[in-house]
Every structure is written in structure tokens, then in C-alpha cells.
Image (cartoon, rainbow, N blue to C red):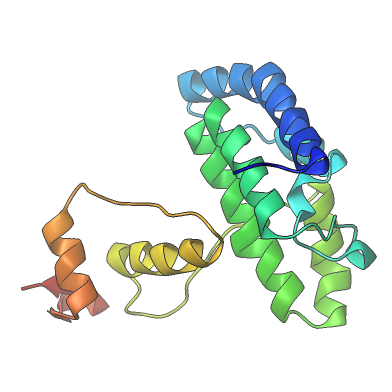
Length: 176
């Protein structure tokens, strides 16, 4: 796929930042088993935390393709930081941008986009277990133009997709 000049420039800027800043922090984060909090304001100052959010709220309003370009380059430097970036910028920021009211956007979105706040995904349903989350991620991320394929237990994923699950103890689910 050929990228426009703007897309190439964006991708190269993120790649340079990721190789110079993210990669060294990723090594330290892995060694110390610590989250690199100081990256979020840096991502925010580059506009990376609000790629899909409206300019009114401090975002770039650049769309999902630009988000995927950023995700690719950050993940190239560190898969774990890339996944944390995706949870923040897409599962959190993008959902508030799409579904939040103006008061919620004013209160949360601006600070999420600058990196003052760090966003994540939380599920409150009593039956939400690890497979429900994986299934949700699979469906959601496919709509964001990239796929995550989980192969560690393919039979369980196939059973989940076919709906062949039954309620387990403690509100969770188990596979037949």
C-alpha cells in the first residue's frame, strides 16, 4: 500500500520517537516490571493519544488509519507498550470521543489526550472473564483495521466463537 506524503511523515515521526525513546524505556520497564508513566505526556505532546479524537478536544481528528500507523511503530519498539497505547488511545479515548457527552469529554477527554490521565478498559458485567475480553478485543480491533490473532488455545477460541460455552461457577464461563 502506498502512503501519502502526510502519512509517510507521520509514520516516520512516530518511528523515530519509538526507536529513540520507547525502545530504551521498554527494556527498563521489562527489567523493573514497571509501567513507563512518563511516556504518556510525551505521547500526548506529539498528539498520539488523540489521533482519532476531535480537534475541539485536543485530538488530531486524523482517523483510524493514522492510529494504526502509530500503533504499528510503537509496537515495533515494544509490544507491551504498544498494547497499552492501544488500550488508552482506542479502547478508552476513542470510545469517549464517540459516545461521551460534552461534559464527559470536557472532564476526561482533554486530560486523556494530553497524557495527564492514563486510560484503560474495564468491564463491569459479572460474567466477564478472560475469554469474553479476548472475544471483545478480537471483534473491536478488527473494526479498527488490524487484527490480533490468538493461537495459544485455538480450540477454546473456536468453541467460544461457535457459542459452545456453559456457565461456570463463580459467575465465570467454562468451555465444554
